[in-house]
Length: 85
Image 1 (cartoon, rainbow, N blue to C red):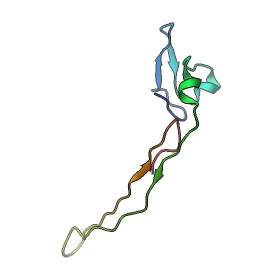
Image 2: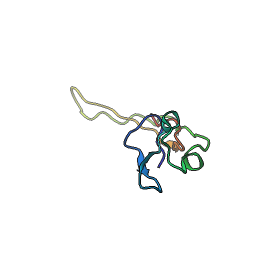
Image 3: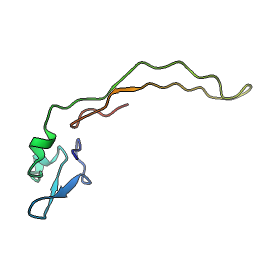
Image 4: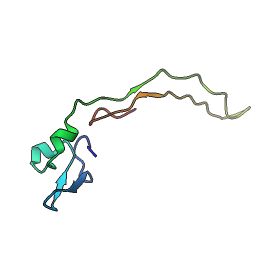
């Protein structure tokens, strides 16, 4: 797996059985996994979402209540792209 930013939980065992990292910060620290560039440095694709849907009805017929609305993810993030809102 590939992780954006600095993420110490994003690691694997290298072929030499040592810990190597798969986060984008590994390029600065020089401890990337051997396949990091091939597997993780493809073009980043940020999340894209569709328009907001309609508001739901109120959860309470009287007094304090809430309404909700949602939107769908149209393009999920890939290769370290911007996460979904």
